[in-house]
Image 1 (cartoon, rainbow, N blue to C red):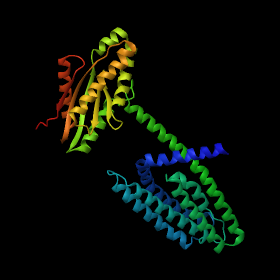
Image 2: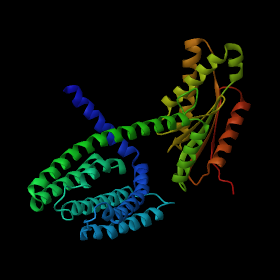
Image 3: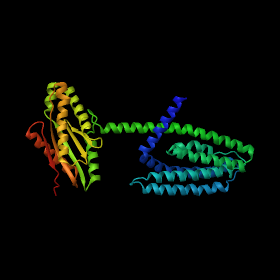
Image 4: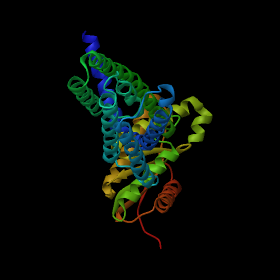
Length: 373
């Protein structure tokens, strides 16, 4: 029993995390699904109304059948217009969820009216089936989905008891309760697949942003993250861009071997992640070069301390532990409340790195960013 409780807690925690982390994509998918489902409801109801008299000769549609036809068409128009207006804009998560709730309430109400008021002398045909199908159609938080389903089921049961003959109503009540439990099973299976798909996408997304030899960002991911940060920070960006180049790295590969070279890259990347904050952006720019954007850091003393620590850590990691001497050249640019573009600041940091290399190994050159018209 305890293991079952632990599994249930883990499942609901994974479900909450999924709905929180992937909320925007879920809202977009729900919004795209809504008009399709509303249109399909209208088409199926129209076909039902046209075909049923040929199958059951004495059957005639009730007013509830006829009323639900324009209601379903109106829901299609409403959701389609909203979804179309959001094709090139951010989707409001609350608005998407609200539209799903409005649609489900109208669908449950319309189908319940047809199954109870429209077919007084026959068992319900549609609402129990709708309970089972609904978790597949829309991706909603568990409490939202099952609050709607349970309210619909309770309302349906009350209507059946008040209006339908008891001999028929008991079958309707039994089918509704069974359908709710079946919907729980369907919801569990579908949501588990959705969570697995999300986790797989996140895994491959993470892999696509990471360097093959280390745990830092690769060139493209680090550049994208830095551009995004600078755009958000302008026109008063405060940060430092640092480029680090391992000295004579080719000699290390040639004399100690490529496996040792890979170890050096991994240790350097891990060292940079320790020295800089978790909020800073650390990436491998290519070969033996690393690039760091230190957010909010625009003090020369702070960058100088970081550079000294990098040089000391390299010695501790390599020469003291393995007898391998590894040094690096560092070029840095400080941005102090200025408007800045990534390409421009990168070129200035690269020029500072070039100066450090000209001065010899194990050097650091720091420049103040200057905006060029």
